[in-house]
Image 1 (tube, one colour):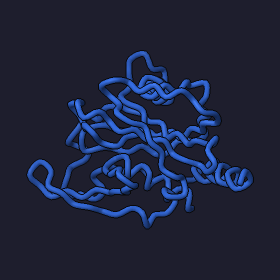
Image 2 (cartoon, helix red, strand yellow; image 1 turned 60 degrees about the vertical axis):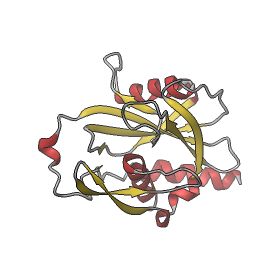
Image 3 (tube, rainbow, N blue to C red; image 1 turned 90 degrees about the vertical axis):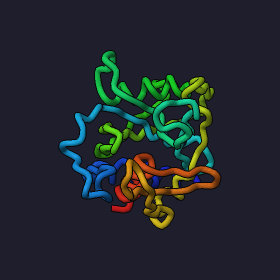
Image 4 (cartoon, one colour; image 1 turned 30 degrees about the vertical axis):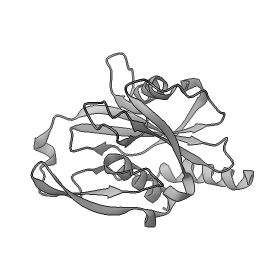
Length: 202
């Protein structure tokens, strides 16, 4: 099993270096004008891969239902760039520690994915980090309601992803989903996971 995990980690490190396709919420909705709609705000997220589990797992959060933006949605730990952040990686690590209690010293950043632009005006840079030991989960009250994990193998299978459509701001809009158990993972989070899946299948 350990050799199996090691091969996966080696595959992650080698394949993501070669993957360079940026994405956006606008890819499935070409009638939306990406360039003129926003001055995009910078944000960064961490895709934590838990290597201390029996099999590799990816950590996700469920946002608080009391939040003004994206209440109750599934998200990576991370957030908007702060003036105190010296780099996008620092943003991702700082926000992750604040949201779930993961100390940056326990994160091994191994790669980044190309940025993703959202219809809500953010340009998100995702970073992959290996988490090699258990940590004490401390959820940020009023922001994170729950932490859960998805098997790495589940994300590798592109057949688990699909495209759905709903009415948004008066128009029909399409987006990716990757449901897992009781969790409806969709939008930017699903798209970034799809980018990860495609990068690792190169």
